[in-house]
Amino acid sequence: MKRHMRALILLISAIGLLCAGGCTVPSDSVASAEIYALDTYIELTAYGENCNEAIDGAKAEIRRLDRLFSVTNEHSDISKLNSSEGEAVKVSADTYEVLKKAIYSAQLTDGNFDPTIYPIVRLWGFTTDEYRVPDTSELNVMLEAVDYKNISLGDDCTVTLKAGTEIDLGAIAKGYIADRTATVMTEAGCSGMISLGGNVRAVGEKSGGDRWKIGIRYPDSNDSFIILSTDGVSVITSGAYQRNFTENGITYHHIINPENGLPAESDLVSATVIGTDGAICDAFSTAIFIGGSEYVQQLYSKSDEEFQFVLLTKDNKVLASKGLEGQLELTDKYNDLVLVFI
Ligand code: AMP
Ligand code: MG
Image (cartoon, rainbow, N blue to C red; front, top):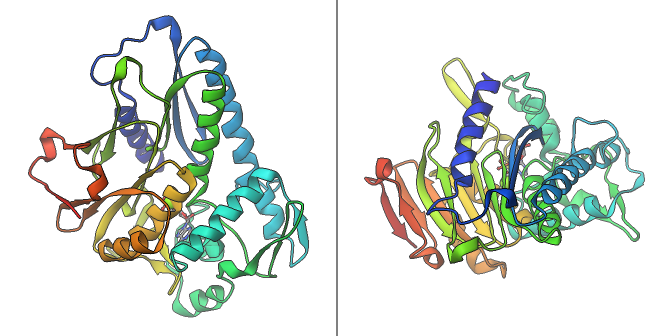
């Protein structure tokens, strides 16, 4: 079932990678690759003279960062922190940087996004795929350890976690990795596209003066409901449909409300955040999915971060930020959805 889901995700992410509008790039200056990492299918496309070098560099960068951030690899920086029992741990510059961004995002989102959610995610079985519904008392015990303020960043890349607290970068790592991978491709002199399980990073400018076209997936389908025309930004989506299980007729998904340890319930079925800092987009998409369409306004006024959003509501409305006017087009199949700029 999971494999099947992943195949669908792969298919859908491919939509984002289509060279829409007619590509003018000569075939000897385009290279692409598909890899499986970060627990998802990843598609890479590079355009430019050094496209093969860009793809090799991009693959190596993704694998390097995956080894640092993975909660299931016992040698990762995050695993070392999670078993540190209150002792300071020296981590890589990348782990330090992503943790900095994670704490900053947790502060801005009032803890809707909280990287210390790991004990709860594990209770539900989302990291191992051994799903089960925990009871309230178990959740309450584990919730005591959930608080991003339990992460202290020291000098020289040292990090201390309060004993009992554990980190999961699942809601921010893909955005961060997309940015780092984009840098590798840019340094090789290439433009291109990076799709991490449907989260897309457009790298540089498309040749021929066109903008990149990135599809946002309609939940539980193979199709995009809307196409965004854009330049080098990240387009990151959080949705209940991305990972879930059903028990006794109730579907439980992987985005947890840190207030109660339960799968978040808001008026949204998916939240897409668009901006230049992929890590922030990723953290914000998770927080906005949890908080809902009214919360997005709060976050907008509170944060100095420049970001745009596309929200799909449970009553089939598409709410998009005004900054995207002229850049969004509903697809033919979904043109009965109501698109509102707020
Ligand atoms: P995303 O798809 O970016 O919304 O991230 C979801 C993943 O992040 C989940 O699979 C969990 O590993 C983790 N996660 C779930 N809830 C939260 C939360 N409230 N804050 C931070 N990470 C979370
Ligand atoms: Mg996220």
